[in-house]
Length: 126
Figure 1: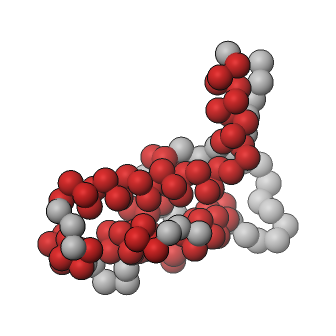
Figure 2: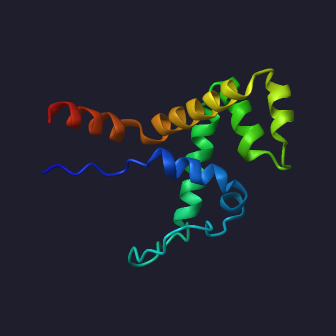
């Protein structure tokens, strides 16, 4: 049996974005499962901080049109209304949601990198 570690789900990435303010503040996410992962790290960096670093890096690699969607929906400092986001992007509702899903998919690919490629290869083999 082959175990591929390090693949973060699209649902988890969406959860990070939905709870952006908590992630940014370093708080525990509202629906986070408490896990005992052993002793804490010596450097004092929490798993939430590592998640934030990974997400920030992936966000910086998104194409500009997807960055705008992520900003308008999830990461802006102030709450942006749905109709304002549609107007700012110049798109209809269906296109807005399509771009949101596309941004999640692209973040998924960026964050998972090689581990995702190995997982896809394993699935093709079996």
